[in-house]
Figure 1: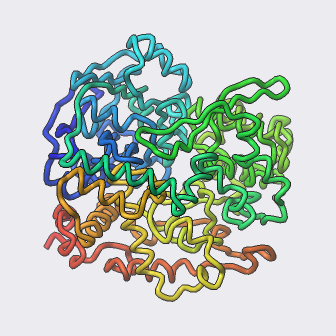
Figure 2: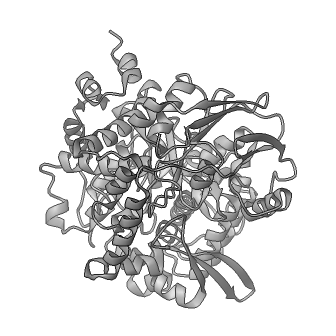
Figure 3: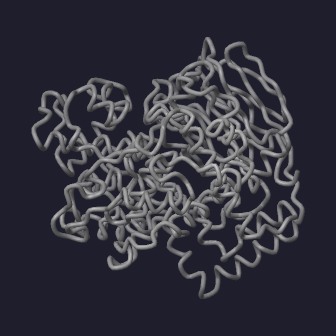
Length: 617
């Protein structure tokens, strides 16, 4: 099949065995790749209600059909597993180069079960599979691990998806890292990898992906360049120059980004405090060079060199979400502390959203007398205290003192300490990203009811909906159909392997790329079905685990219960259940349970396994 290399690797770490199978072509046609194809395989490979850290638990690394096809923006891969955070389906994707290298190694996907007796890493070289001792790598941070692998392998021609100390210690905030700084960050996938004593999956090779029409892909790329240079491409510039940081200031002043652990408003983080954290200001001070993920025409990444006082370090430009997590969420305007905490998270393998959210929760608890200075081991964690923010982040990273009990983020911390539940900002246990559900009602629905909750890159009305005027975004009539359309679009990006910056491509390009890869002109109906089937497959995993609509939760403060007084969010409370009713109605799912109707499953097709389990008669 075009778009695939045609093989899947299944590994059992318990006895260091593996099998190589042909890619299931029907599944590839029905689900394409990424979280969609990953969910279909996990549904087959993992028995229902398998404990997250059991030997039978499976973690998968799945490419997308546009990976390594020279399609612009087509470089992302997906990690799938069960989440230790909310005990349901987890998918988290990452950019960089691992997706293309996975295909070059000869596989469209790798699925791993079992638990190794000692640390190992998988070395996959042109379909040759080796289990290599990783005892000497265990405990090493991200870049140290990559350097050690480079020395052992003898060249740079590989890419590794790996864990750092966070994953080894099974932190619920543990990310899987690649290319030094790129992260499959959400839902604790790094902890699943760590539970298996799997330090890294290292891929290289010479396999190629065939496409039906290489000239068409070249033509689409050429057309984009003309588009980007023309008047319609004007919006591309800021993202290319300053990356995801380009919109940070606007989002804070709109109350879209989190402020003061979701309890504040722009008056608490005014423009003069936000400005030092913008890409425009930080780039001028610290930027060394820019870089891009595989076949990316935007290049949103940048390397920083920070030399301030006794500190001298290189790190990557903080992404928008990281700026929110260590900036406005903590009322912190100090760029050194934000870049330093970003460095720590990348090196120790932590999700920056959850790390910043955990410190913000602790700050608010401390402000309200729930923790003493002695309990915080002398770290005076007041709002905006940059030194204290860096010290607490380091303590969590080093797994020391109070950091041990913060290692699994806020919900587990509340359970351990028995206090602070009123200051949580989470969706089904995972800390909320920085597109406020009160500013953007669509994100409130997405954060709560997506099968992988609390994600800003999942489908719905989308992040841009929060920029609409109040009379538009707080009008809840006819909400369901546009919400459904947004789900279809986001699912398409994720299952294809596109970055969500694909909205900067020339309109329609990402669909033309897929047609060029497969040699088939997809109708609008076919594209819709792909998106709907993907969403349903991810949801089906959770339904089989007993998770239905009633089990998805979000912190009351994140939907305005009670509402904030003053500012852009004055007196805003989101009618979340109404929005969910409209969404499930538009999907033709049972509104009370959030389970697909039999008619939906039969109409969409390709979901016979789900149909059999939900409607066995």
